[in-house]
Length: 247
Length: 199
Image 1 (cartoon, rainbow over the protein chains, first blue to last red):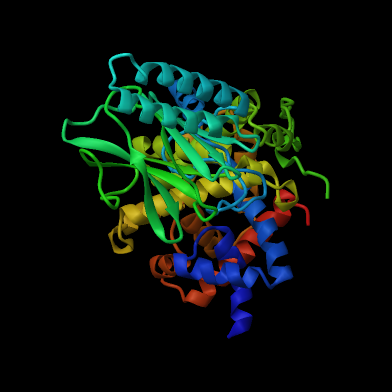
Image 2: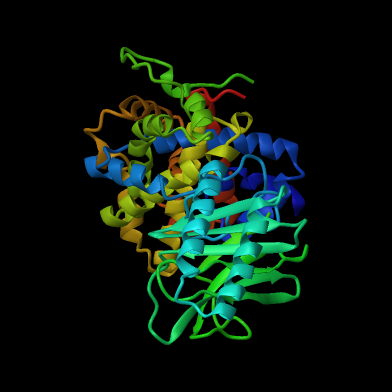
């Protein structure tokens, strides 16, 4: 029975196995060096059959492909793409652009400063101003922390950043130009951990809501943003519209 | 083992234009080099689209799948390892798999009619007769196909260009499963030796 499996090298190289057969055969390949070697040669041979079918691509296809690759992140070399792997990249499948750390830091400071100036206005009541001042202090403390790390993401016109300081045990989350929501909805940010999702805060309405500050525990691995009823919920009611993996 | 640029080897009076080695380009693409990717596109888009179209037949779907494959090459270029085979083989293996997955999910196996299969058997290369790219390879493949038995050739064509599983091939040709498995393997081995795919 087992001797039979070696005769599948040709069928495998031609992609002529069913999905279940392919998986089983790949398990076999992992432990059969002669089959692996033969498969490599036969796949190269099949590649020659493939080249023989060449056609001229439509001229317009090139620009489309070149544009598409700009929306797609390349895999990191040699590192399996598992959640929790040692990268600070967002783990979402939607389209993201990753900023350089320097640009992100500058943008984050700029955003925080702008927001700071905007939300501390002379019209506020004293106690609210005091609370807002404490929040601003909290934000700046995290930004200024020696171990502060930034993760950013951008999708379509929105931009978001999470600044993490494990020494402070706090995270700052800031987002701007998120798509406008209906009047009865809010964006809510959550910290994801093994125990589930903890609310990080509810974003105020408008293009530049005040940054959210929250306690960060070592077990928190990511941030997700969901759409909730106005004012927020006690637990996420749907899939996140935005996700980060935290450093 | 050195990289083996089979596509560059001239076996007849046809001169082969020098192109930057695909394997080298892929190493640059792995580092995010878009200009290198453009050159990869120039070399591979035609082969990928042609192969996908050969299997899928529908032009619109073929273009869609070909574009997906090219983007996937970009995305996974950091994982490409030259010691596992040439970049071209890697790309065409991916293209063929995607095309086969698509054609199998699009139609239940029983829907795929015999007349499509017989058309494939008798005219494998007619759709690309005027295409310069691949002309040399087509001639080599045509020549080497002649070294196969009719049953070997039919099995290989139905499986590879037709996207059929070996079980379907056994039904289409009305031969036992074991016979098809052996014919596919022996046929590819003969092609391998004739085309000079080194061990």
